[in-house]
Image (cartoon, rainbow, N blue to C red; front, side, top):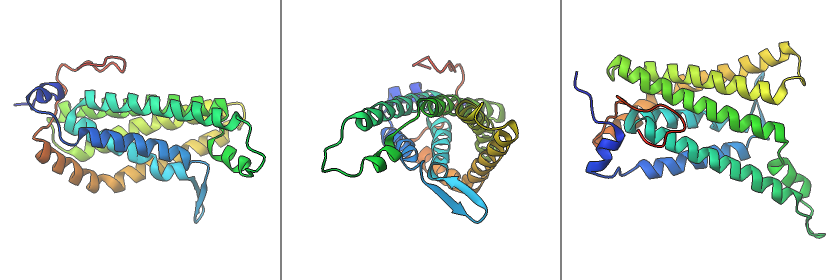
Length: 235
């Protein structure tokens, strides 16, 4: 079986046209999802945060990065997103703590959006990091196992593993000792089910985006010999 070149090998021939744009979009979506997170939305009997409506898109982006450009591109995007989230959390907290002007009466609303309980901030960062890397690792490995066939098996399986890690980590760190074990399981099940269904419904769109990018970029990365360590900034 003839495998396409890895990301770094292809980049030596010509720079990718859309990789930087997609990476920026990924980071922006990630940051916006956290800003809209405090809003709780009601859909019939379901209560979901604004973040749950947008955050799963970052996993779809992770699938696209890994499938088209390779694990190294996904790793780069994940770290950029991680540092962006960290900066947003730190600067948001600094802005909350600064004394407001006497004529400015929106402090409480500002606190609602930007104020972070340290435990929840840590939970969000750790869960994002662990979940995204699990997602990309599963995607890259399954592409090798399937020889690049059956994209849907990779997008769904990577979401099943990545979102499981993300959901368990964020809820356990944020709510352990605060909620009962039964309530924790209900929270995990509801959030996890929503995210997986979201990915399955979005699979046709993922197919379209991946197919178009492979044609436009002229690449289809297979991660043979890739160093899958999250801390290695080279293939």
